[in-house]
Structures are given as structure tokens and as C-alpha cells.
Amino acid sequence: MGGMKYFLGVLLVFLMTGTALAADFTVQPYPRNGQGASAEDWNAAMKDLGDLRAAAVVISKSWKDLEPGSRVYGDIEQLAKDFSDNAAAGRAVFFGFQPINTVRRELPRDLAAMAWNDAEMIARFKELVVKLAESGATPPKYVSLANEADVYFEKNPKEIGAFLKFYEQAQAILKQNGWSQSRIGITVTFDGLLKGRTAIADKLLQASEIAIFTYYPVIDLKPLPVENITEHLDLMQKAAGEKDIVLQEAGYPSSEGIGSSEARQAKFFDTLISAVRARDQFRMASLFALHDFSAAACDNYAAYYGFGKAPKATRRKFRDFLCTLGLKRADGTGKAAWQTVVKNLE
Image (cartoon, rainbow, N blue to C red; front, top):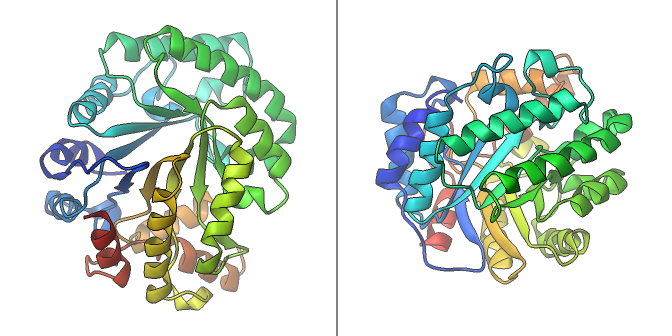
């Protein structure tokens, strides 16, 4: 997102490390005014996060972000600095490396249609990792090698075998190039455990060192009852087996248009934080997000996720879900959830 480099610089000034808990908590610092955020907006977001005892940070990049052209690399030095500066400040760094992002591949153009286990795909991944190693970056504590991959493989089931071979080799390459202590996995969705993607999610979780979930308890664009959180966490633990769990994202909409409310959203975060703290298997939780998406961002995401041309009623429900996940509104005014999270994490 725009302003990310600025955000990661000022993060060091404003973000505070919290007391030791079973899980490290953070909030995704999406600023007011979204994609049009100014330096002042980012400063305001960081000042808000100063009220939280955040002990982690999520940094996500697609493969094509880091390699926009064949062996033409993005700002590796800045990424390395972000890793090292946050680690030095005592924050657990979660790195979401995304050759897959939910619904599509996010690869350099010349790799876009290549089989996942093709020798060239593996070689190029190794070259990228070597670049990162040469930068002197402090290795992240957690690494995801695909985001919400169960959604992608539901539509592309014939690719999963090749991807798991890629993942096995990619994990070994990271371990051999200085990231031996990083906990590596593949991010799956919580709703994938409920909606018929269970077999896919199980395969991805079995291959992973750590179980990584995004947690939005919304099925068919209808929020599930907040009272079900304990049941949901139980289900994640069952799917994870003995593996530690990271909540890469955890969020709940506030829109009354899909049967929620600001009060229900606040109750979700109040209940979730307490429930996660009570379970040692959960090592990190990133709450999504500081602000609602801007109108422009909502339009972009609706198109990205395939809702741009959906029937009007479906499109509205999708926006009501995705565009009301913030603890604050897009203009910076707080919802009940903001004070709830501040109180729980102080």
C-alpha cells in the first residue's frame, strides 16, 4: 500500500513493545484516508498505535513486489532494514511472502504461468533469497509462503501437488540461507475449515511448521455470532494439531447492513483477545485493521476479489463486510472497537 516505507520508518518511533504474553499482539496500521494517506495520516496512525502495547509487526510483499521483472529486484535493502529495525526494537516480525494472494498468483511476469515445481521457479526463488541474505536482514520470526492459499487451490486443485513440492524446496532454501530459526508455514483461511476446503487446508497445514490462519468469522457475507469464538479457536487448534498458531489477520465488520454493529465488533475483539491470551498454542495475533478502507480502496479490492461485476446486492454486502473492518472509520473517528482494543492491550 502507498506510504508503507514511510510507515515502517515512523513505526520505530511510535510503536511500543508490550509485556510478555502467550501471544504477541499487533494491529494492522491501515491509516485514515487509505491509499491517499499523507505523512500526517501515517503519523496519526502511529500515534494511535502508541496507545497499544503492540509486540509484533506484519510485513507482506508479493513475489512480483520483490522481483517486478526477471531478475530485476525491488527495494531489498529497505525490506532488510524493516526486518532488522523491528527485530532490534523487540517486535516479532511476521513476513508474508506471497507468490499466491487469495485468488491469484502474484509472480514476476515470466514465471506467471510456470509450474510451481519447475526448476526455473525454484532457481529464481533461491536467487531472491540469496539477495535477501546478502542484505544482512535479521530473519523474521514467522514466514508465510502463500496467503489464503486454500481459496486459490479450491479453484486450481490440479496445482496443489506441484505447489507443495515448491514449498518444500523453498522452505529448505530459506533454512540454508540464514533463516534456520524462522517458523515457516502457508496461510489458510478460517472459513476454509467450514466451507468444504477442509481437505485442502489440511494438506497445507500438514506441510507447514506453524499453523497460520486469517480469521474473519463471516460466511456467505454474514457474520457469525461472536459467542462462537471459543468454538472457532477450538477448531483451529484441532486443525493445527500440536503446531503453534499465528493469526495473521483477525477481524470483524461493523456494518448493520450485513447484520453486525459497532457494538458487536467491539465485543468480538474483547472476547477474542481474552480467548487467545488463555491459549498458549496461539503465538501471535494481528488485529485487522486500524481504519476502514477508503472508498477507492474498497472499489479496488472488490474488483480484485471478483466482486466488481457481481449483482448489486452482493456487491453491497461485500463492501459492507470488507470496508467496515476498521477499529476506526476511514476519516479517523473511532468506533467502540478502538477503545476496547486499547483497554485490552494496555
